[in-house]
Structure formats: structure tokens, C-alpha cells
Length: 217
Ligand SMILES: NC(=O)c1ccc[n+]([C@@H]2O[C@H](COP(=O)([O-])OP(=O)(O)OC[C@H]3O[C@@H](n4cnc5c(N)ncnc54)[C@H](OP(=O)(O)O)[C@@H]3O)[C@@H](O)[C@H]2O)c1
Image 1 (cartoon, rainbow, N blue to C red):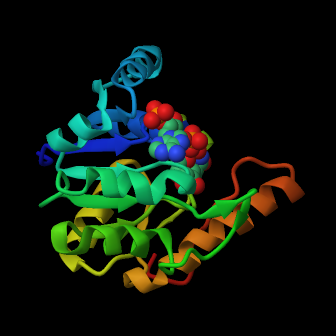
Image 2 (image 1 turned 90 degrees about the horizontal axis):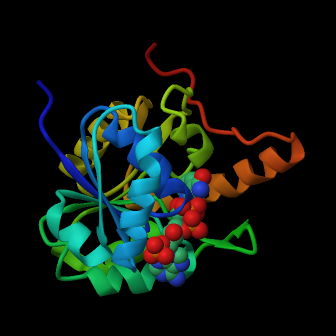
């Protein structure tokens, strides 16, 4: 039997957060949707119930959600990234952070001063918790349909055990994870999303994603 895990999604009321919550709840992961407003989280959970085929969701303030979870996904627009991570510092000790944030300005990718969103979060948190980059190149639209095929997920970070545990979570949502190296690689992975956004516009799609070939099967 698979180990019980709990995951809080900071900014879980948004596009990526709600879609990820449905994907995680289906295989029985305990998901706590976090919001700056607890009532908003509760009402989003209520609205997701009709789409939930299996499992259950909870809604809380971001602060309370992270307190209750072993893993914490950061899923807010880049503008709010540094502040929310700083606000949660102190509550994240001993947890594994999954950072999905793509630095975008007017829809275009850029490299933030810390080098990437992942490095920014790790710099803020210091040794309190490992930050692992993942899910940047997966579309919320594909995630929300739990039967839709997903692209591959490039996972990066400087803690090998934390990276391995995040790769296990990626498998549970039905995607193939790849160990994409250290946190120093995060800016490349975050930046690919800018290219995917362009491809979607250019080719009138909503499903552009990344597929790795030439490795194993
Ligand atoms: N959408 C995708 O397909 C996708 C795919 C891969 C990666 N990403 C990345 O994942 C992150 C979330 O994407 P999204 O599309 O879900 O974004 P979103 O819907 O615009 O926002 C997500 C949630 O973040 C919270 N939020 C908004 N502004 C904030 C701020 N200034 N400070 C703190 N919280 C704030 C809001 O929740 P509350 O008001 O409830 O607090 C909002 O519901 C982004 O960085 C994006 O680049 C998105």
C-alpha cells in the first residue's frame, strides 16, 4: 500500500492549484487548498466537489494549510512569490517545498535577480526546508482532466532525498518525472514555459508540453 501523504497548495484556489488538487486527490493524497482568505479556499473546495471522482479536499488559509502538510506546493503568480514564501517562513521547517512558479512579466519569461523562482525561495528559506522545482511545464488545463495525458515533468533541486520524494508525487498524478539536476537548472525549466505559451498561441493549442526522448524506454 502507498504511504499516506499530505500536500498543501499555497495559492491553491487558482488555475494550477485547483487542477493539481483534483489530480492529487484522485489517488488518495490528502490535499489542503490554501488561500490568503480561508473562506475563498472553502468555497473553491465546495465548487470542486462535483468534479472529484475520488478522494477528498480541504480548504484553509495558506498559513494553516502549510502547518497541516508534509509537502507544500507554491502556486502563486511570480509577483507574489517572494512575499508569500517570506510570510510562510518559520512554518515550513521540515517540509518539502515544490515550487511551480514561472517568472513572467506581461506573459514573457525573465530571470529574476536570485537566478530563478526556485533559487529565490531557497534563498529566503535558507536551511529551513528544501525547495524542489517541478510542474512548470504542465498545463492546468490538462491536469484538471484526470484522464488527460500529461507531458513529462522536469524536477530540479539541491536535496536528493527531497527530489526523489517529489518525483514519487509526480508519478502519482500520472506523469513521468525526470531528475533534471540541481536548483541551478531551474531558470531553464521555468523559462521553457515561456516557449510553451508562445507555441500554444502560434499553433492555436492549449496543450503544449515537454516530452523527453532517448532515455530508457
Ligand atoms: N496555469 C498553468 O497552467 C500553470 C502551469 C505551470 C506553472 N504555472 C505557474 O504556477 C503559478 C500559479 O499559476 P495559476 O495559473 O494558478 O495562477 P493564478 O490562478 O493567477 O493564481 C493562483 C492563486 O495565487 C493567489 N495569488 C494571486 N496573487 C497573489 C499574490 N500577489 N500573492 C499571493 N498569492 C496570490 C490567488 O489565491 P488567493 O487569492 O486565494 O490567495 C490565486 O488564486 C504561476 O506562477 C504560474 O506561472 C501555471
